[in-house]
Image (tube, rainbow, N blue to C red; front, side):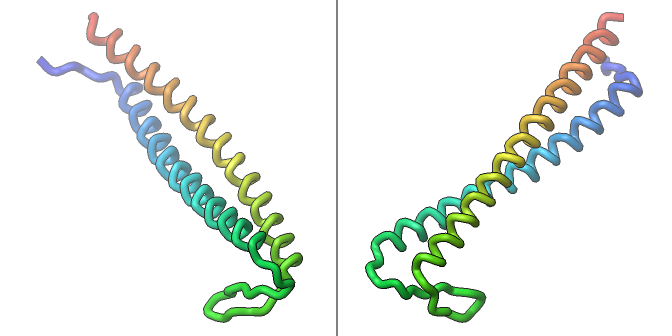
Length: 117
């Protein structure tokens, strides 16, 4: 015997699928940001080891001579920006996850309620 699913529950399942897709996208964005942060931290660590004031930065396919202090400042600013963006994505993840959980609970109640009839 097949379970009859109310039309409203079907609509909620579609919403749930959209939220799950959003969660996947946001998770990938967060992972990408974390990867960039790790790479940036590694660059900053390596720059601390350099004793010269002139260092080189790769921009596109060209290596450019830069002042070490200016490069460190630029990288620290980029790190702050990435941290802020990661925080925003984390908040979005929490919000979407909460909404998806609410809809999932709602759907389960609808299906269970309809099953008892």
